[in-house]
Length: 65
Image (tube, rainbow, N blue to C red; front, top):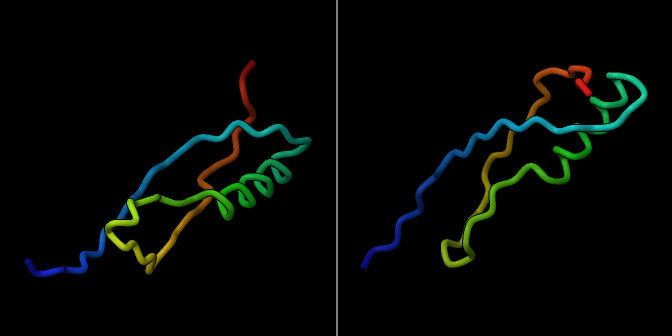
């Protein structure tokens, strides 16, 4: 069998609930979380080799209780 390298793209939007004193503080906390945790995990048998990673903040809204 022939081995092929196939590039894939994964996109997922998520709403995080973050406690903060201001919208700016919530945004900074979200940026840190994204930097540390935004990823897709693939089984090692496929020898994943990341070539690109994007993440962004879309909006900050005050939560409803």
